[in-house]
Length: 246
Figure 1 (cartoon, helix red, strand yellow):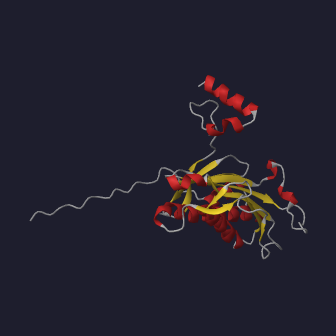
Figure 2 (cartoon, rainbow, N blue to C red):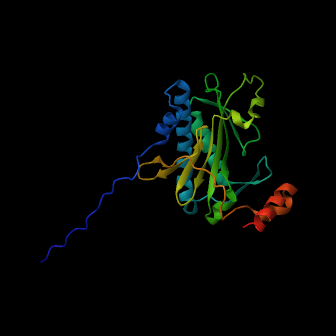
Figure 3 (spheres, rainbow, N blue to C red):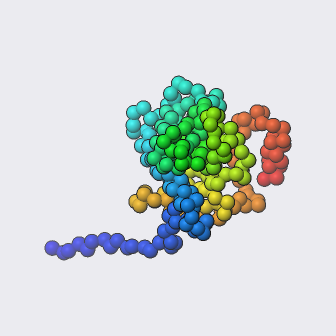
């Protein structure tokens, strides 16, 4: 009986260095100072939250009680999805264990969420939208998480978190996670905008694009024109301009 040769598995070397998120943060800051270590730890916490949310979304259609509305309305007047609440709870749970974040402010909460056990030493605040575009979930379209990290200013003794209303340039990090065919984390700490893609086999976000920029000219624009008449006139004028110059 003739022997059947087993198919060969050809291993391909990666075309790029497998640069992880934490390593990239240190390289961008060119420092191993305490602040650099804090920022690396914070970004790793965001990455952990993203992995948990990504896993849940990938099985949402197979699990009971994941899709649909809760019957509640958030501070923006929007109907709350079950995944909104799940993702919000994930961020809270992940950052409770960080020791670095004292407060979290989310679209799904009327007031900032305080973590008393972190507040004596945690001088950072996370502002985030746990699931942006959650109305897309039931139809299996892309959704995302948006985040901003800021340092606390003052003691916030009255618990009103007034220092959250700061200029954007006071952010120490910002970005978003896109949950689609792959899960991508895009972030900036003021040294360019960088893209990481989640490798499920490694459970790690790996650098996939560095220093991305919006092109000066492009053939495509994207907006929800169903809200056209709700926009300010200057925005409507811009969209009319785009229509004329495609």
